[in-house]
Amino acid sequence: MSSESQTSGEVPVLELRQLCKSFGGLQATREVTLRIMPGDRQAIIGPNGAGKTTLFNLITGIYPVTSGQVLLFGQDVTKWPSHKRTAMGMARTFQVTHLFPGLTVLDNVLLAIKGLRRSKFVMWRFLSSYKEVYDKAYHLLEQAGFLDRKDLEVRNLSHGEQRQLEIVLGLASDPKILLLDEPAAGLSSGESTDMAKFLMKLDPKLAILLIEHDMDVVFDVASQISVLHFGQILETGTPKQIHSSAKVQEIYLGTD
Amino acid sequence: MVSTNVKILIVAVGLLAFAYIVPQSGSFVVLLATRAMAFAILAMSVDLLLGFTGMSSMGQAAYFGVGAYLTAVLATKFHFGMGWDFWLVVVMGILIGCALAALFGLFAIRAGGVYFLMITLALGQCVWGLAYRWNSLTGGDNGINMSGRPNFGLDLGNEVTFFYLVFAFFAVSMILLYVLVRSPFGRSLAGIRERELRMQILGYNTWLHKYIAFVIAGGFGGLAGVLWAHTNGHVSPETVVLTTSVDSLLMVVLGGAGTLVGAAIGTAIVFGLREFLSTLVPWWQYALGGVYVLTILYLPMGLMGIPSRFRQRTQSKDEGAKKLASKPS
Image 1: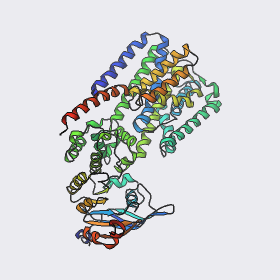
Image 2: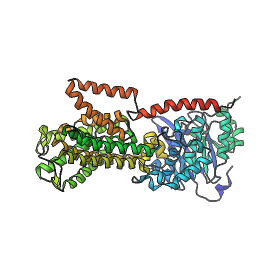
Image 3: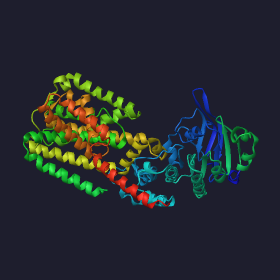
Image 4: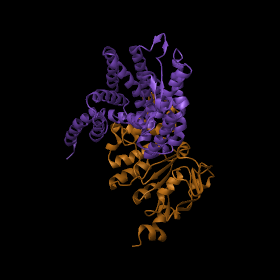
């Protein structure tokens, strides 16, 4: 079940070691250990309340961890704030859309591109004078097919469009690992198929860790699946193995 | 939609017309306009926080106050800042505003929303308390009376000359703040206002951005205080009192947060109404209160939101028609 990259001795993009998180008496994450190599496409599935989003919030530094370690490119980032982790090449999207609703599509992407540049502190020059940033924004918008809607305020976009824009913002910082928190949440089946296609088109060197309920998207995109249950990783395997695992069927896919 | 260049042109013409008309309208209007412009700098600094960063500060009077007290204390106790050294006082006023904001920001920026408001309010009241109680330095409740304005070739004792000086400060502040809010840094503040968590995930140290904005706003507050002290020739705890902070906040809301020009317009309207109404009726404060309530209820974007409101109404009609026409059946 180990993919070829794991044997080649590369440094994992992301590594979790015995990661635990408690909220008071509730153990939301228990001893999660995980390794993502460059270009891996790994999905995390699990029933509602299994601790999937909590795990993402630990990886991205939104919650402090209770115990255990988070490593990015072999470096311990457990105590780092989110923005420093992003600077190392990590990006994420949110289950509940987290865009800048009052700003235009273009402004959203510009902010995302600027996030890792030192010129974000410049106060004496208009943002519009940074041609290269604009070019990159136009390029990203063109790839995602948003160019015609660049001047719309994001709150006026449809839900499906907002979900796609979430990913565009994630890609704007040229990440090496992208964490996707239910990219297909609330999408119609046609839209989810588009989303899966969109994800499969992404740079193959980009590692993706994906939380998703839509099994069609998971089976299309992921080469490895981990099953999370009560904050614990129950099983990891290829889509086929997971699909046929009795244990997984019992807790997740239903026993009928 | 009106292009940005046209908007800038409108503001520039408006400012020039203002600078041309006011000096011809008698000394009462000149003094009123000078006071309003000094205060408008404070209001614009509040707008930087409220409108562009989404932080409602209830303590901007503190920076305004230290600027004003600095000017008054230096002028009366050391006779400093009454000649060319007025410009040094301006720089010192800005720096002391920045320094105080840098200190207060350490406490305030950790919190968001209502908690930020409460902490800034409490810190502002500390400054008021000092002004009220530190008799030897601030003159306590009586405050400090200053004698005359600086004279460095330009005699600022002349109301019209002083008006032009404050006008220049006001215009330059507006330009600087305008460049700031359109800069990469300024846009990052808008992102923080819209969704701070996303900004962190995009790689922004949002605390630092908010802190820098807070310090800059403090600097403009200090500058406004220096000008205010010389405008009135009198500084008292009244300058630093909570009402000053609340006023500046309400002026921004009235004019339209996130527009800078709105802050200036709001200030002008409140100063104008106050002078005008207080001579007519004893219950003028209620009238002002009514204006605030109506604005918040019916114009949440403030007076500057009126054009876009009209535009939206016509646009949504247009778009509705377009959508119907282009919909494939």
